[in-house]
Length: 111
Picture 1 (cartoon, rainbow, N blue to C red):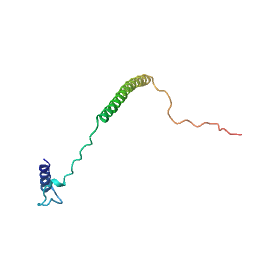
Picture 2 (picture 1 turned 180 degrees about the vertical axis):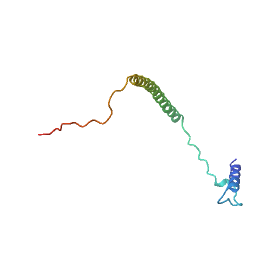
Picture 3 (picture 1 turned 120 degrees about the vertical axis):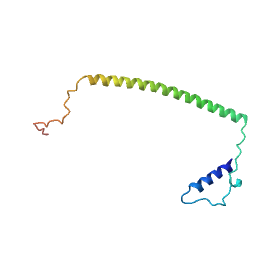
Picture 4 (picture 1 turned 30 degrees about the horizontal axis):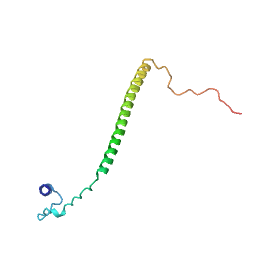
């Protein structure tokens, strides 16, 4: 399977390469492939500890997700309240004068 992938890649590089192409003598070599490293054997005790750690992590994630759901619901409620307040305030005309303040005609002096 790896050898076939090599041939496909060689063909792609040879056919579509613009600057350089692989040498025709290039060939697949199994010895250049990295050797797999065997996974270390684990004892039953180690596997049980790992299972307990994963179970604890799952419980914490479940709690966090529940808290997030509650916060999302609260945020949704607050957004609805905010929208209602904004709508009620928009119904009342704004009569405030937003222009620059007029300068005072009297000057204040200190001491």
